[in-house]
Image (cartoon, rainbow, N blue to C red; front, side, top):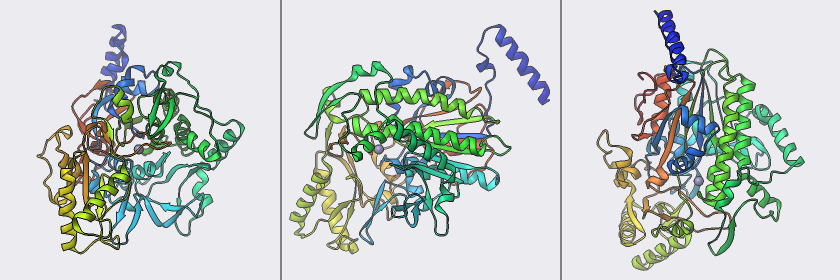
Amino acid sequence: MRILTRIAALSALAAAALLTVPARAAAAGKPDPKLVVVISIDQFSASLFEEYRGSFKGGLGRLAREGVVYPSGYQSHGMTETCPGHSTLLTGKSPNRTGVTSNDFYDTTTGAKVYCMGDPSVVLAHDAAEPGVSPRNLMTSTYGEWLKAVSPKSRVYAVSGKDRGAINMAGHGADGVFWLAAGFGFTTWVEPGQDPKARLAPVAELNAKLRADLAKKPFVWTYDNKRCAAREADYVTGGRAWRAALPLPKAENPADAMRDLVASPWTDRVTLEAAESLREQFGLGDGDAVDVLTVSLSATDFIGHRFGSRGPEMCDHLLRLDDRLETFLKRMEKAKGEVLVVLAADHGGSDFPERLKEEGYAEAGRVPGATWLKGVNAELRQGLGLDFDPLVQAGGINSLYIVGADRKAPAPLERARLAKAALALLAARPEVYEADEINALLTAQPPPKGTSPDEYSVRERQRLSAYPGRSGDILIAFQPGLTAASAGPSYVASHGSPWNYDRRIPIIFWWKGAPARDRVLPIESVDIAPTLAGVTHVTPPTDLDGVCRPLGGAC
Ligand SMILES: [Zn+2]
């Protein structure tokens, strides 16, 4: 039967060739991969994808032309930061279930700030003095873990420019998780009793090469794509005058030179090199079992924060990335088994408000983080007769924690008094669209089944960012167009809001013979893991938020 089907398919293919119908269309079918490559481009919003889609001629172009493209994927939650966004990609769950709700938490029982991936029981392989990170705070399992449970021979490797980009996608029990440490190369964590050298062995050769390359010829970012120069212009942000143009002014010291290097296409180039090296070293996709390689590309985010998303820098970076991804895809295709590539993003983003204003977006503006919070605290101190600041932030001002004079959680009655006053004050502020109290979010009902993620109310979005003991006591949605941060010398733009420019991302599934079509209705980033489970015959946990999206066949 199968032989007959194959013969029928072959004759159809021959007929298609005679009729000069592209062979790809005839070969369309369900993917059957031995290598699953999941790429997250950090801060790659759906609008960036749309803006450049027609210009992508390399790897991004191939994925967009030949793959199953969902131009409206959603990171459905409200606090659209890097750590929570990455935590949704391969767990099938929103941040209120992964426990990774923001990049930083404030522990009101100790009064300490906690990094989302922070783990004091481990150290970093390249420097034992650096604070440790691990998947300990990720409160759920990933696709790689489900796969390994039924296929012990499967390998899971992860690379990124950022620790949180690698760790969240790999999950627990992966074979190798590596990210860039400035000035060193790729690193990982070391548990007590483990040998740092052995942990770094898979990247040791690459690290030596990267350091030698930089010593021999430092990376200078000049235009690869001359047409991007048309976007050059002068701006003033945060009182600083600067020109959006390449190359950048020469760095004044080694620290600034490193900062410039990290926020450049170099970061993605070496991250892709690390991924290629891991595939080739370990023969990922060459055997009988399905292997997983996750790649989180951080440069788009670094560049977006530093220069904004609509300037010559982002233009040249994305076109270079498109080009570099073609080399990457070709190297992945050397695997003996079929390759399935998924492309997504941890969140979207928008441009810096000063340029948006010039383009006619009158609503664009800034809420100056720390200064703003100081003002809110001053009003509360006065109104309530306090001699301490009752609100603190861990990362951004969109998540505020209520504290007493000792900067820890106050007693329940006092907490209720402070929360009531803070919520009333915030509701009256014109820059605040909505302020939600954590207990109201934790007890809120989810939207009716089948509600599209673009139709979620702000409260429904924030509900997906609420996790007891980690999220702030008050989650704030600022008015659309407002950037909740001041501009600094190397920081002009941000993300993290519940608005769709920060939530909407492209999601693409590509394999050889994919049916090449756009599916325009919204799906969610939490659908990726159950879809991969469906394709690779892995039974996912039954309590997922996401659903399997059929790729050329039933799930
Ligand atoms: Zn970011």
